[in-house]
Length: 88
Figure 1 (spheres, rainbow, N blue to C red):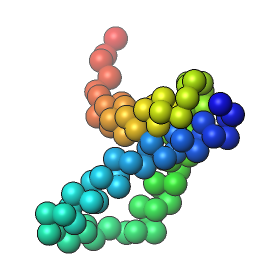
Figure 2: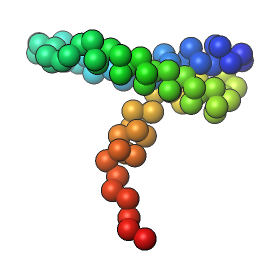
Figure 3: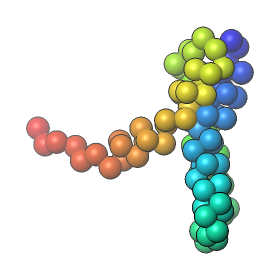
Figure 4: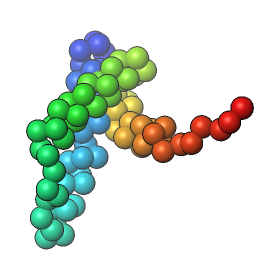
């Protein structure tokens, strides 16, 4: 698996949770949230690129594993952001 394809599949995996989230919002008849879409899109692109780089660093053997590495990145980032560091 080349680094370029690994990067692309990792990026695809990282965007899947957002696609599912927006699909569920629309499927339940709710309106999409009123966001600053330009800021959201910019931050999402940065996040997707980070997931692609993370996937390349992981060196998965096939496409499925690259998607699998990119998809849980939101949970990992949220856990790291919300965790309170312990005092030494």
